[in-house]
Every structure is written in C-alpha cells, then in structure tokens.
Picture 1 (cartoon, rainbow, N blue to C red):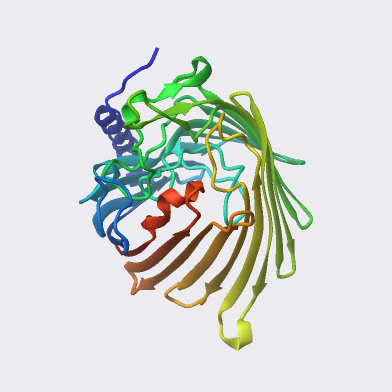
Picture 2 (spheres, rainbow, N blue to C red; picture 1 turned 120 degrees about the vertical axis):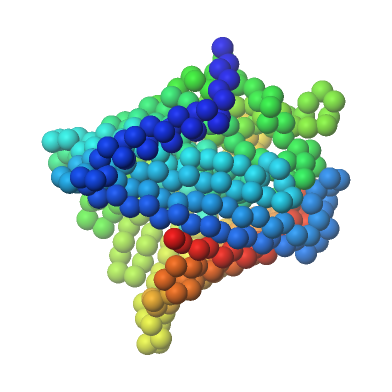
Length: 404
C-alpha cells in the first residue's frame, strides 16, 4: 500500500518536536543557531534546447541554517538544518527540505542516532560510487553533490578492530528533477507524481546497510553492504511519449573504499559490486592526489588530482550513468588565508567518445559574516551521447551568502 503523507504537516511536526526538545534543555546546556540567506544568480549563455525551458537568467534565493544543542556531559546532541529555496523560473526548484533533524547519544560502549541525517561515504573527488545512503537533490545541481535528508536509525560501536555501523532506513525518498521550465534536463520532463516501484517495493519497504571502518597504518578502510531501493531511478517514456516515468528498482550491493596517505600522496579506490533488478555490474573509481604544500613559499597549497572511472551496467535494464569509461583530472588551490579562499578545477572526459564535463568552483569569505562563491559548468558531447542533452546548459553561477 502506498502511503500519502502531507509534507507540510510532517515538517511542522518535526519542527515542533525539535523546538520542545531544545527548549527543555537549552538553558542547562550549550545551544547555538546560525541562520543564513543566499542570493544566487545563474546564467546560461546559450538558448534552451527544449520547448518550455527558461532562457538565460535564473535568479533564486535560499534560506538555510544550523541549530545545535549539546548536553553538559557532551553525550547527547541535537542537530537541525532546514533548507528553503525560492526560484523565480523553475517551480520544481522552489522547495523545502529538512537536511538534518536528528538526536544522537553516546552510551558506555555504543552510540545511537535517530532522525533525518546526511551520511557521506567515500574518498574519491570526481564521484563516490559507495555513497548510497542519501538521495540526491537534482533540482539543486546535476553533479550529485546536493543531498536530501534521509530518515534513519544508526547504531554504531567502536571495537579493538574498528568501527561497526548498522543502518535502518524506514522511508525511501524519491529523487527530485527539474520541471518543464528547468534547465539541465532531457527532452522529456520527469513525471514526479507517477513514480513506480519494482519487485513490490514501496516508500516504506525499508532499507538496511552495514558498514565497517578502520585505520590500519597508512590506510583508511571502509567496507559496506546495502540492500534496499536504488537511489537512481530507471526512466521510461509514458504511453503518450510526453514525459518520463521514474521506476525505482531493488538494489543489493557491496563496496569498499580505501585511501592510503603517503607523505604528500593520497591514493584512492572505491569499488562497488551490485545487483539491480537482475543486472549485475561493477562501478569503481581509482585515483591519486599529490599536494605541493606552500608552493614556492607562496603560502598556497596546490593539489593535483587524477582519477579513472568505470561502470559496466546495462542501461537498458537499470538507471543510466554518465561515468562508464572516463578520466578525471583536476587541481585544488588552497590559499590558507583568513578568507579561507579555495579554487577547484576539474574535467571528466569519456576516453571512448571524447564527451566532456568541466567545472570550476571558487569560494572566499568576505569579512566575518559573508561568503562569495563562483561556479561554472561546461558540457561538450556528440549528439549520440547521453551528455548531449545537457550541452546547451553550460552555465555560470554566482552566490552571496550572509550568515547571522
């Protein structure tokens, strides 16, 4: 049975519960709240490829914040991170999400976290194939960097041989996609109101994951298994051929992420072996990073990054990917100044077709309460390649954030 929840009531209930919990404890413990407002301006230099899409300018504003409560004994914690974007052009991009709303507690020999959370796994720069807990928020960005909050219960325990974590994810969150007005989409918009689930699954089917982490000498090691619903849906055309229907399939996977730190070198590996709706495939990222610390006595650290990506899934059976046979090359510049200035350049190239996705990200603090960001994306692909549907969506984004 598919259960329909009123999102506004659910969010209101969570906020009320959080307020009561914080109010009852804040006077006896540490409590902090840092709200922020970001003005964003996105510019697309080329006209859109499909009818109905916005043209050149996409202004928006979003509100965020972080509230934390920590008990006197430092064993109990509350965390709340709301997110609200209002987009002038794309209605689907105007949305509210609770990125974090959770309670955690350390006991004598284990710890527990309950609520909405964002969990990150992985060591690679270009793509994290092992990062399976949270759903991606594609109306925010198409590069799999923004996540929706995931309801979960996590049980963790440190032992003499490493840390073990058990995850139960009671509710599945469907992926967001740009609407008919939005850029960075294909020729057909995704019908978010008619999602389907494969093999009898549903939103409340429940997912499970186990993870092991340890540091052995120069090696940081993570091992996981996951069974549940795949975060990326398989998209098929509806009968009228006017939209795409997202189909969420069952996924079982095991994965390993390893990073070796050796002087100024970082060697990175992520590998996943998966079974999704009967399609068995492997996804991996192998790479290295070398950092020139205080380059030429300039105070700037320069990191050189190189990674290879591989994925052999059958895209006629499972969700497609843009990272089948690719090479990533990039550089990170860190100024180590009061403004926390940082620049990241990167390009992913398909070594078989020459399709290319490049990005530039720069950020810098302004004074004590503001941050300025610049992000540019460039797409280049042959007409027969999946990336070609975004080729006219190269863009430049400016952001100015004010913290209070």
